[in-house]
Length: 96
Length: 360
Image 1 (cartoon, rainbow over the protein chains, first blue to last red):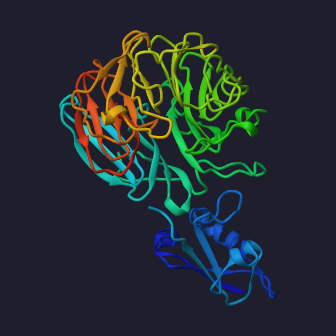
Image 2: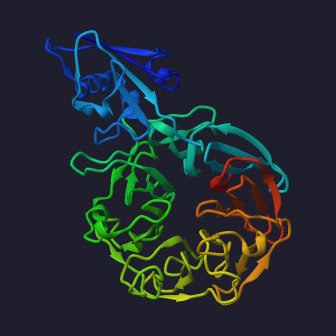
């Protein structure tokens, strides 16, 4: 199955300048978001640790959407991702 | 001969240079724009000086970066220089201190971090290992975070032995005599007015500790209320706050050359944390804290800001230069041990850390 992970401009340099990373995974019935992000980490470890800390948790001011839904209000990293799904990473509104 | 002053701020790093024995400075930056640089160090033990920066990528988390060309290019390891091991159930929140060890240990760099943890690098600061002796200390679950977070913010390796001293807010002073394997609190005499027990074994909110030029047994501590000195490696501390206009402050700096000489920046506290009467002043002792002299030539009045714990440092020259940065983005330098200051920079973001070296 194929999943596209969209990235904000601030992270594009860590994906070779691209605004997305395409991930190929086994799992006809879908996989978890955690598996998708683990797969991103294989080829893009610096990108991956901008999104999650070393415990595997999504960073506090990073939001991840699966087909437009914030996973914090769904199943978090256990949210199911199916073939063709778009995963989007966005920084939250924070800072000063 | 060039003197370099590294200035870490809440939104990047600036480098000031002086080619006239610290009389005038030119400013280069920003480097790492948008990234908080809470810890900075210049490691001059290497053939090319290495800038080390403990950074916070805004939304994207903390790490350590380094530059071997004075900020021309920056590097980081793929998986992060500081990374809690699996099973620790902890994640790095902030790098508070980067401390190169002595020339005799040329690749050793220490890092103090939040949550309360000490790290040691043997590759010049590219990657670090958790010092498990402190992390596994039975006191650790009861170390509380101060307002800025719970962190090891001061690391003092003794160049002549295996002693390592750390200080943390809160937690207090802990010392290892075996290079970090085992640790014991050394806070006797340091008060903790925010705890029901006024003189606990540990739990003090030590803001900064500095080692006197006479040797590692004499140290100074600027506390959350109280300025103290030890003459026995931290076993006993006595107040040296008499003569200061306030006993609160964040940094303390000791002369690397002259025994008994140290500087503090008193603040009115607990709630205000501003210079007394809005006058930014450094106070210097020449007698290990028995007496203090106010120094203000070149420092402004009408200042309602603070100098945080690592935004104050000394260089290693004769006479000693001292440097301070404020939370309103001003940096001042003195080439004569504080007798007079000049403005190095203003309108920067909040200054969090300064370090000065003479480039080889």
